[in-house]
Image 1 (spheres, rainbow, N blue to C red):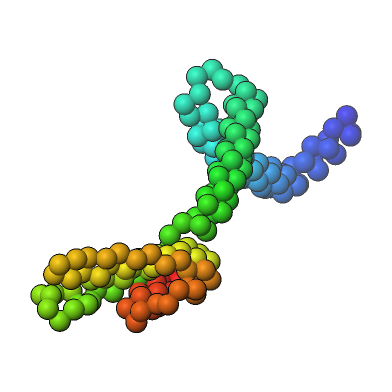
Image 2 (cartoon, helix red, strand yellow):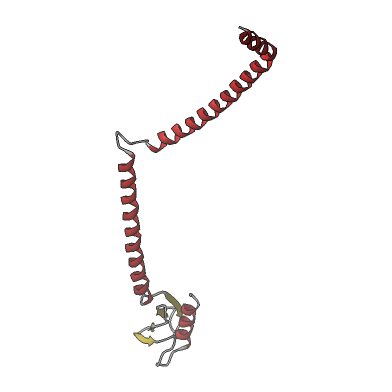
Length: 169
């Protein structure tokens, strides 16, 4: 019985410290519980957002569908890129620059009814079209342009139309 009495005396002597330790342990446990509860709440919100719009679907099926969609989108991008490249190549030969000059070819006509139009592609190849309008007749001319030059004689108005087209790079 002596050991019980010694033990009881020892417990009574250190009882405030034992109770203080238990209280500190309970407060620390409560803080850990609150922290874990907050993390669980955030995870639940993320899970609910992830599963929005999914009726009874499992996560693996959802992820596999998403991966299939991503692969399809990548394939579509590759196809669109090749189409864009083909269009870029085709566009090189299309009219990209144009210049027009209107002028009065003859003193006896009333206004600027004559004109010169230069139409060129990316490589400055194309044509200069001219129309000379007079009271009794009208004449049209077409002169080829290769690399910004023509092998035919160009009038001042045709040169000016070419210059206007070349400035539109």
